[in-house]
Length: 111
Image 1 (cartoon, rainbow, N blue to C red):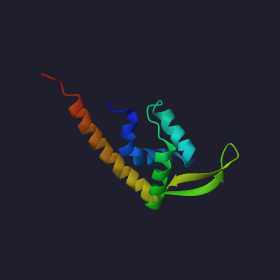
Image 2: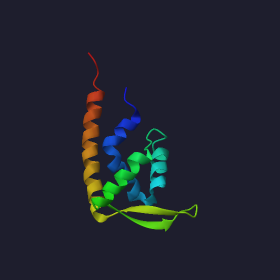
Image 3: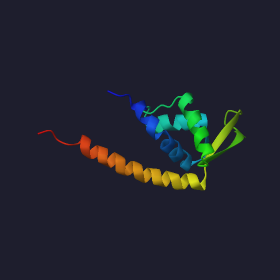
């Protein structure tokens, strides 16, 4: 059986954008929020999170700025851009269609 974190590989961009749609956050806080919301089921390593953030920024879907964090350290804070919000809406609709189709197949009753 696959680990729950295997799912994150294909959906990480969507998850990051959704978390940033709530409010700008630094990378560490994004990872913590994902763990918290998912009840510790979804955990993203720094080795996956930061390259994904970099890629999203290159694509223009998020932007970043350096700020002082709650624990008084410099941290890069990420926020959603208007194109990022449009992409999030499109990807959310695609995810809803895909997850609905998968659920329909998984819930089939054996005869």
